Image (cartoon, rainbow, N blue to C red; front, side):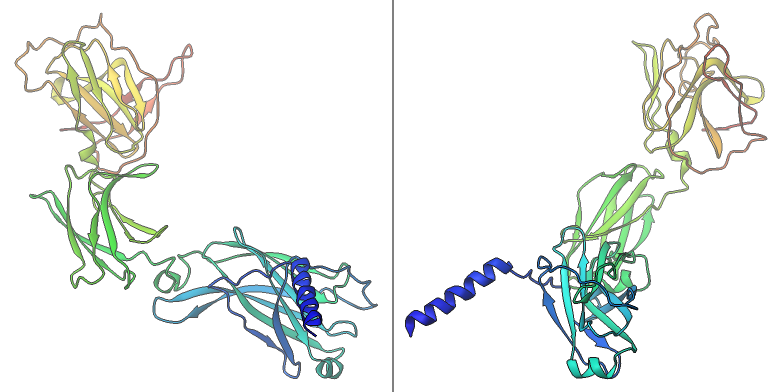
Length: 413
């Protein structure tokens, strides 16, 4: 008797190994199947790696009609998950006694479910249009899932395959209800004299700490200091963050203190374009005038000479275009009449770095033109320019880049 039991146990283990282990369900997955009234059905997990040859379809057999959608499954105010809903309609014919529904999402093992129709209800509803709705697989916001539906037994050429694009976090209630989408809301006040931002947070994940920092926004947002932490148990969700200059790309960034948490970002000084034109430096030993943008900005930087009525006239061949790179002008005379002009799509500003020096007021020598650096690019700020026109360019001549002439009175800073 013991020998027989051992043999049966060994046979069972071999069968499981040959069939392969069934994949474990993800925490987001939950089985829920509904069938048309009168059609008794039962669902069970199905091994995605098991297969059998398809059968020739009987005359009149059609491909099922499948629609894909999503639904929120919630266990609390901030405890919702997205579920893929697969709705299948088909004419119930003699050989069909169920459906197989498989979902494949990136980075996950395929999830398959087999829905079986009872024999009595199949006979009763043969030839009728029936509907099966399955909601058993969780998907992430913005995720793409591949769905395959076929009948049991599988009929050759009568299967359905499609792709579902899950809604993004910006859709509907996801930002308030799905943990993967909850970023918190940032509110701030500016203390200009202290150069501080007082930041408060609302609607954050209630069971997680929260992080805040200041950063300079470009291709990525580069941190400018330490990260502040707000503890989940703190009654007042508020911190103070210090800044050096209120430039347009200075932003507040916040996120929950969990792995791969989504982030929210607000930039309080977007319209402070005049703060971009600081930082012009001069090296008297090298006679080099330079400037590097604090924020990405598409700007033409040119040298000009203050003339009558405080109009700054561009010097020939002394302009450069940049976005993030440092601009350098060499062989520059430190003259109070020499200024740097910044021209963007929205306006122009002029900085005169030598205005307060006691050097002789000799105009820059025309025999010593300022060489031109390579032309590059930058992002667009906004700001008023009290002008009567915009920048104008001449066509290329002899392969040389165009010179920019401003038909405007620029703001002298």
